[in-house]
Every structure is written in structure tokens, then in C-alpha cells.
Image (tube, rainbow, N blue to C red):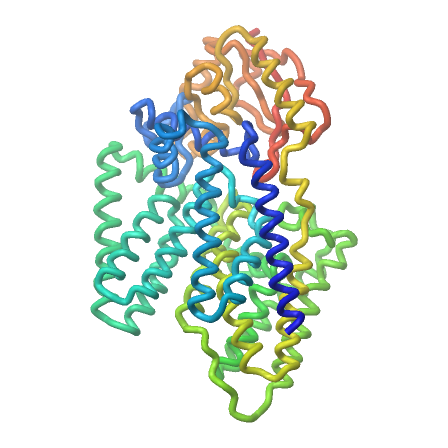
Length: 536
């Protein structure tokens, strides 16, 4: 079908756009996402033979992540000649390329080359939707590949060795990012339906090896691993209003195809009209809620929608897709149809990815990378489901399904220039480095700890660490060290603040870095070096 080929072609355009952006982002030796430098200082701390998880101090506070990604960076630094933003981003890019390759392999193995290409294209198209995290120095790209690889291994290698391998991949994934564990119950459920002994072995291996490894590592860190990674995370608020409604509202308006097309497929595969009507009613309420609150405050999730102005336009994609899906359901023939081919396993993984992203979305400090599990597994499931519907339904349904895909891919459009360093960024970076060169003594730059490490050879905490340990009473040594005027200068990024800074330091000058967006982070918390403070 022509429309289906158009959808594949659009996806490949997004793939090409991602490669072009990544080629410009990877070599940039400054934060594209504001926590990148902090992640690199985790690796630097390991290289110095120190613990990541240790009592909080101004010297270091870990992010609330498990340790495998910075450990990998530290190990690879021996091969690359040291740590750098470029090296760390290349690692993330490598895992994203592996994810693309695995998506294509699964799609081709399950159905056809075209399905594999569509899966790759859909995932590439969701690059900006997911915060542009596919190539930043964060654990997300590694986590996504490990989860996809673990789920595929459990599905495809139907042997004792495959079950154990999948379980170990889940454990490795858990030590990359805790969200991995959300997929384990669904994989275990599917294995139980296929082979109860394999299911038991899988769950025993995951929980046995996972629990033993967690205990051993926690013991090695004197209990601080558990304090940060589990108790610290529990200190973040969980918003029930998000998981019950606002998450579904956001997905419905950011990527409506990830809800509407699976519902269409589900209605064809299972004769469960009550469930279909319940889901449709829930999402319909979410649609009405957003339609009645178009005066919402500017929000990071919606900021990149090219059709947000006027805001009435954000109603168009989900409304048109719902209408097309409704026509397909109403025109369904009463005669016996060919059975849909997509294995129920991929439906279970789709449900798991929706739940995983929902939990992340509903946690305090969530950002657009919360949608990455949804993006990768829905890209695969949508490709399989669309192929099912096109091949087993009347021609009209096939055209409607292809039309839904094309409409969504057009709606995913974004300006790639917003995610790549500009000449103004490079000029501002040179000006920032010149300002640092003019300082005699150590610098405390909470939003840029890796810059300080490269300059002074000394690690200090990230701004996020100052906020994260508030549940422990904050950084108790910070006021004393500011009072002692330990640093020759403190760099403050707008809109951040440093507690107690004004008591012992004075504002020397506001940094002149050119245009307002120059040297500002491209994604995540959009900070920018703003002020230089010196001792009073």
C-alpha cells in the first residue's frame, strides 16, 4: 500500500535526522543535558578508587541510579584515554544503535523487512518526544537496550540457557536503571503460560541473583547503596493524579497512536467489548479534560509540538486518529476473518512499557525520558499490529491504519536545530572557559561538576545532589566550607541557587555569554551558567 510505504519512508527520514543531530551533539564538550557532567563525575570517582555510594557531602552525592553505566564509562576510559562528554555519549549512541538493530531484527523475524523498518522509524521519530535522550551521557539508552534484549531473549531462546540468560540480562538492566524490574512480572507470566519450569527458573534467577547482588553491593558500600537507590527514591513524591489520568492525557496528545492503534488491534483480536469501551471512555475523558483546559501553563511535554499554537490544534491528531479507528471498527465485516498473527507476548510487553512509563511519569522530578520504555516497545508493537490489521482486514481498514501511522509521524515533527549546539553555543563555551581561566584557585560549579574536575582535578557534588539529600537534612558540610571560602569562585546557573552562598560570597559579575539561549542545556532542566560569585 502506498500510504504504508509513506509511513516507512517518514520513519527513515526521522532516523536520518537523528544521525545528523547525533553527529553534531556527540563531540560537544559541554552539557547538552544538565546531569551529564554529574554522571561523568560518578565514573571519575570510581577511577579514583572511591565509592559512589558514601555519606553525603559537598565532595559527592550520587544520583539515585544504580551504578552500571558510570562503571562502564570508568572501564572504557582506559581504552579511550580518559573520560569525556564525547566518550560517554558515544557509549549511549552505541546502545541506541543496538536498539535500532534489535528492533529491525525482531520485526523482520516476526513478520517482514518492512515491519522491521517501520519499528526502527517509529522509535527514531520519538527521539524528541522522549527528551532527546538517545545519545546523552545518561544510563537511559543502555537501560532501553538491555530491557529489549532481555525481553527478546526470554521470548526467542526457549531453553534453560535462554531463560537464565534473559534473567541475567534483567539483573544487569536493574543495575543500570531500576525501572527494568517493571517488565519482569509480565515476562514471568508469559513463561508460566508456556513452560512452568522455565517460569520458575526465570523468577528464581532474577530475584535470587538480583537480591544477592543487591545485598552484596549494599554491604560493600556500608548500606549507602540501599539508602540512595531505594530509600532516596522513596523520598520522591508519587502523584496518583498522574497515573490515574494525567499520564494518559499526556500520551493521548503527545503520541495518540500508541493508545489508539493498540486499542483497534485489541478490539479485533479479542471479543471483549466491555474492556475496549472502558479504555475508550477513560481516554475520552482525558481528551475532554485537555480540551477544557487549553489555557494550561506552558509545559515541557507540549513545548516541542509544532502545532501547539494555536492550542486548539493539539486536539486534531488524537481526534482524527480516533475517528479513523472508529470507522475501521464500525466497518468490520461479520464474516470469519483471518486470525491476527502478533504473539500475545508483545501485547504483554506493550502493557509493561505503558506501566513503566506511567510510573516514571508520576514520580516527582519526572522528565520526558519517562516515555522511553513506551517509545521502544510501542514502536515494535505498533509495527506488528499495523501489519496484522492491514493484512487481515478489508482494504479500507488497511488504508485507515496506514493513515493513522502517517498522521502520527507527521505530528511527531520537530525542529532538529533546537537539539544541536549552535555557533553561538561554541562562542559562549569559549567565553565561559576564558572566564574560568581568569580565576586563580578552585571553582565550585554545582551544575557543571565535570567542568570543575577537568579544570582542577577535584570532584564536587552536582546541584541535583544538593536537592536530593534534603530528606537527610541536606549537605551539612556545605555552609562550613562556604564560610571557610574554600573556593576562589562559585558558578551559579540560572535558575539554580546555592544555599548560604550569599552569606559568605558576593556576586562579582553576571557572565556575558551572548544570546540568552547560548550555552543553555538543550534538554532536561534548561540551566545556563549565569553568575560568578567570589569570597566577600
